[in-house]
Length: 214
Image (cartoon, rainbow, N blue to C red):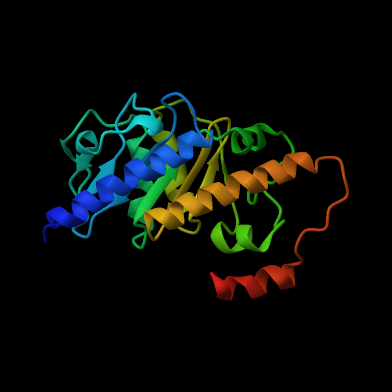
């Protein structure tokens, strides 16, 4: 099965738009962060290495076969394996967003978070778009052990937080992955703003009720 030219063009343009939106709102900076999306034939489009999300060229995005082989476009990001881990374990994923967003990274550095679920259920939209958020232990960039750790958690979670690094978030569509990433960042910000104060998170019953609304 081959993707149509119009499908690929639309997806390339969408990645550029989302990247610019994320960058312009300071959710990432410099050449940090990367975005990928999957075509109907299983091929992947991904932002290349050393590229600012605020200044992407649709024609130069890295393209991979469904098997993960780089076949076209600029040299791929060294974090491409993070995206492939999510797609392999989440067949319904159509896009993945990985950022070094400030508040999410800050939370990933805290010593007292629950590694099975980093953030409390502060809002309904966080629960619906992210759910539970496991923390992946720190591994140096490019370490293959990181790929295995992410893949293991991705079997049951659409989003993970890399310790001292940042979030990796999947979605059925690029828009869903973007919105979930933004909801995660805002919840991380709320969590830090409320530090030291008594909070009233959603109850387990309220969280359970929201699972049917995702």
